Amino acid sequence: MSQLPDYYMPHYATNGRAWGRLFPESCHDTVSYLTVYLLLLMLIPSSLVFTPLGGIGTPAVVLSFIIVLWYLASWILERTVPSRSGRPVRLAMLGFTLAVFASFVAAMTRDTPEVEFLGAERALVTVASWAGIMIVVSQSLTSYNRLDTLLRRMVILGSVVAAIGIFEFYSGINITNYIHLPGFSANIDYNTLLSRDAFNRPSSTAIDPVEFGVVMAILLPFALQQALDPARSGILRKWLPVTLITFAIPITVSRSGVLGAAVGLMFLVPTWKPRQIGTFWAFFPAGLVVLKIAAPGLIGTLLGYFNLLFGGADPSITSRTGAVSRNWQYIVERPIFGRGFGTFLPQTYSYTDNMYLQMLIGAGIVGLVALICLYLAGIQCAATGRRFTHDETRRGVGQAIVASLVVAMVGSATFDSLGFPMFAGLVILMLGIAGAYPGIMAEENKFVSIPSQRSSKMVW
Image (cartoon, rainbow, N blue to C red; front, top):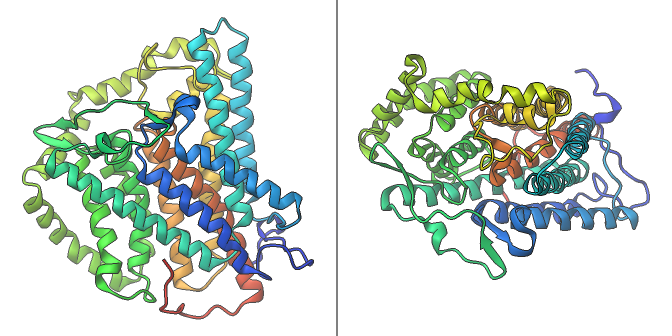
C-alpha cells in the first residue's frame, strides 16, 4: 500500500484542544451544524429567501456564513487546528473563486447595467459562502464515524425530499405553496406543478423538476452504498431510502435525472462484488415492472424523449444545441475572463441550460477551466482516499463520492446547475467531504487497525 502525500494527511495539535484523533467527539459540533445546514438546504423550499438579502438569502446560505464564522472563531481561540487534508479541492476552490472575482473585475470594465451589476455582486457573495462551507467540511471532518453519520443523515433527508415529490406527482398539489417562514418571501412563484404529457412534474422543495431529478441522482450512490453495508440491519431501514430516491428520479419526467442515475450506476455497480452485481441485474427488470404499474405510460414517455435525442425534433435539445450559436457573440467579445459571473441573466438574454456554457460566457475560458478542475479535484481526492483502505465499506463510501460528483459533472451540462440552490449547496458539501475523505482514510491506515465490519449500532 503506497503512501499519501502530506497534504492529504490531517494535522493534529498536541495541546489537547484540537479536533481529530485525540478528541474525535469534538467533530460532533461540525456534523451537527452541517446537519442543520442540510435541513435548511433540502427541506426548506429553495424559492424562499430572507427578504432583506434578496435572491442570495436562502436559509442555507445564511447559515453557511454563520458556520464559517463559528469555525474561524474556534481557530482563532485555538479550539481547533485546521486539517491539512483535501488540499487539491481547496486549491481548486481558490482557483474557482479567483476566476469569479476576475470576471467581476472584467464586468466592471464595461458598461454594466444595474441589474447585471447586482447579479455579479450576488454571485460573489454566493461563491464566498460555497468556499467557506467547503473549507470547513474538508478541514474539520476527521472521523470516519462522523463522516458516516453525516452521509446517513443526507440520505435520510433526501428520502424525505423524494417522498414529498412522490406525493406531488400523484396528488397534483404543490406543497411549497403551503410552507411559509416569518421574514422570508418567495423568490420564485410557482402556484401549480409543471406538467408534461399528462404527467405532473414534481419539484419537491427544489426550484425545478430538473434540479430535483439530478439531486436525487446525486444521492442515489450513497443510498445504495448504505443499503449494501453489512453492518446495517433492517430491510426497511436499508432499502426504503433507495426505493424512494430511485422512484423520484423518473417521475420528474426529466432526462437529466435519468441520465445522471445511469452514469452514477456505471461508476458504482462495477465496483461491487459479483454476487451484488448479479442481484442488481436480477432486480432491475422487477423495478421496471413496478414503475410500469405505479406510473402507467411513464416508461414509454421517457423512452420517447430519449429517442428524440437522435431524431433532432426535440425543442429542448434544439434549444440547448442552439444556445452556443445564439450566444457566440458574447463569448468572443470577452473570451478570457468573460462578461462577469452572474451577469448573464436569462430575463435579459436567454437560457443556456448548460452550466459550462454559462460559465464560459460569464467567467470566460478561465472560469470554465476552474469549474472543471473543481469537479476533477473532488473526484481525484475520493479516488485517492479509496486506495488507502482495505475495508469494503469505507472503499464503498469513496466510490459513492466519485459517482455522485460524476453525476453532478454530467448534470451540469444539462441545466444551469450552480444557479439552483439545492444542487449547488449539496455539491459544495460533497466537494468538502471528498477533501476530508482521503485524510480520514490515511489516518486510519496509519494509526488504526480497521475491523472488517463496523459495529451494528448505527447513529442517526
